[in-house]
Amino acid sequence: MTKYTLIDHTADIGIEIYARTKKELFARAALALAELLAGVPAGRTSRLQARRIIVEGVDTEDLLVNFLREILYLFNAKGLALRDCRIEKGGYKRLDAALYLEPPAGGKIETKLEIKAVTYHGLRVLRQKSGWVARVIFDV
Picture 1 (cartoon, rainbow, N blue to C red):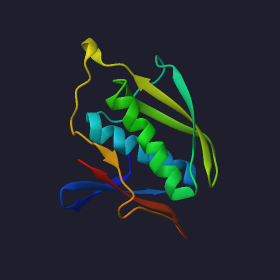
Picture 2 (picture 1 turned 90 degrees about the vertical axis):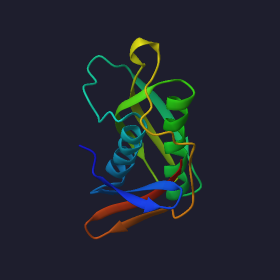
Picture 3 (picture 1 turned 45 degrees about the vertical axis):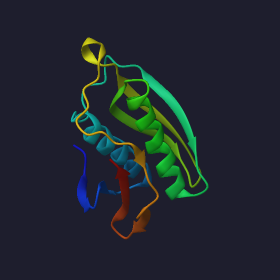
Picture 4 (picture 1 turned 180 degrees about the vertical axis):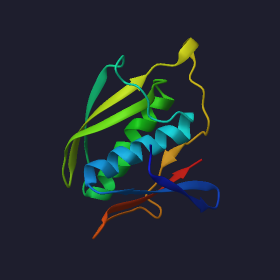
């Protein structure tokens, strides 16, 4: 189950994600985006092949934006819905992830919410005593 909350934002939509570790934070952010896009929560991945991706950024916030942009691209341009995500290696400026992607049933992916872009507006990634929290705003 994805642990995030929706944030009211004029003309856009935002999420706030909570996790114990930074790897878990990135994975939950990816699954939250996937659920917003297709309305499909994480599911069985035993039949799905993992696609490895490496993403870089100038800092943790930029890394999160670039990671989510890659998932948005795979959905919008390639028609692949994210079903699960595992962060293999995560650092300050680079991460290696395994994405479990599902092609659309019947040749066309169904979109729940059209998201145009991942933005830097209001972006934050913070480490707290209880774990990590991130806020991301999407342009819809």
